[in-house]
Image (cartoon, rainbow, N blue to C red; front, side, top):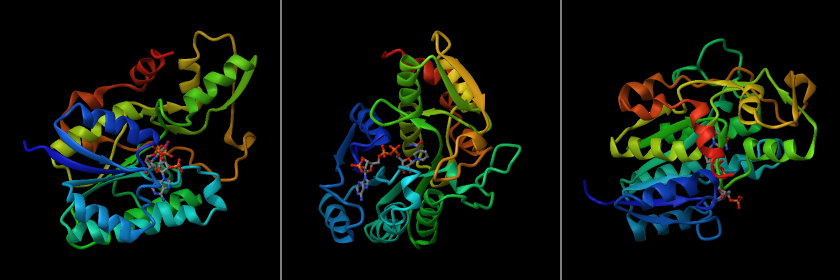
Length: 282
Ligand SMILES: NC(=O)c1ccc[n+]([C@@H]2O[C@H](COP(=O)([O-])OP(=O)(O)OC[C@H]3O[C@@H](n4cnc5c(N)ncnc54)[C@H](OP(=O)(O)O)[C@@H]3O)[C@@H](O)[C@H]2O)c1
């Protein structure tokens, strides 16, 4: 396979950092930019970068991910949604494949079994609305080769995340209340970077759900990675922990479509294995 030339946005983000690390270990030529070097809202800068680099792939890791702030910050819908209109158009114009990440938060959460890619989205918060708009622009762009990976509950060494927050709190407090009625697939960004690499080397196109083999509640997740801690964990319903943005309850993404095409052992990894590996660095 020829060396892939890859442009990455949002290079200091949690997922981008692990993707860049993964790509740097392969034969790839990586051109990564932070928001000051390449603001994805600036269509002329997006075009200028693509024109001068002429990458094979444009991996868009840039996003506005502070879910609660999305409720009031109008810029969020521009970054997560509207920017994908010009990004898609420019990628199609220069025949650059677009890799983009979406979220389980495009779904309402009123399900009893894992959600398939074809399920009709119904976001219940502004972050989900923005991400869905971004997906729509990508899918509507004629002549665009794209891969959208919908992912959920990410944690990684280079970003604010549930594992680090709860670990820190568990050292400061004797008890912690954790919601037990939101269910998903806790996914490390290191694992996701491996999935992304497999997906791009196998030339996957379209929309796929990605994550580890199994799923759990936030409470079960915390109970597992804090099993050696003295901090007492108390399960609570989401209604006892109101947040500005509503969260879907059961939003487990069904990953069987990706399993069927990748046919990889990678997707047999469990969330417990991922978090164990993550905790080894502490
Ligand atoms: N984190 C999760 O649990 C989760 C769940 C589902 C889906 N996702 C999706 O996965 C992808 C990666 O998420 P992540 O957790 O790695 O996010 P992240 O850590 O917040 O990284 C996003 C990066 O984008 C940058 N950025 C913001 N606005 C930008 C702009 N206008 N132009 C260029 N860069 C900009 C941010 O910079 P600043 O920090 O300086 O603003 C940040 O470095 C996103 O598409 C996200 O929606 C994440």
